Length: 131
Image (cartoon, rainbow, N blue to C red; front, side, top):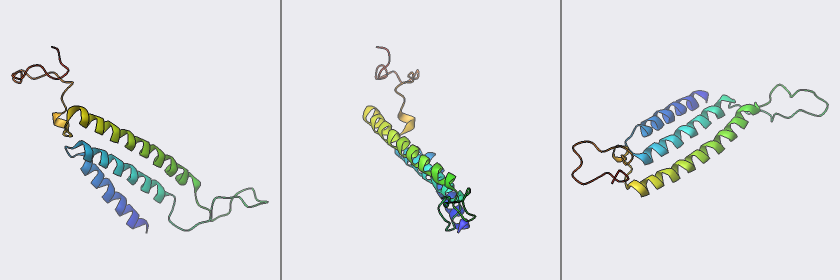
């Protein structure tokens, strides 16, 4: 089962990198969300995929039993889920506001803060540039 999860993590990571390298802001945001879910799956699989007992100490004992699940990957995964959801929500709002302001999702045409080139002054100054 670990081999299947490892191959799945590799395929998801490759597809998220592919999406992030595309020339589209929406695909970049979706690739970033996919890479965070891939990291969650990797953390989940590092804790082991066998059925084990919860990490509770029985009454009268000082340490947990031998076949308990590791609680650290579970705690890390819960934290990573919350952080990745908040980053994804922030990026969705940022991408939407960028589209509203610039009316494009192509990163190459998002040049409102850069100075105009010498040959492109026929239409007047750039938006937000000197008047």
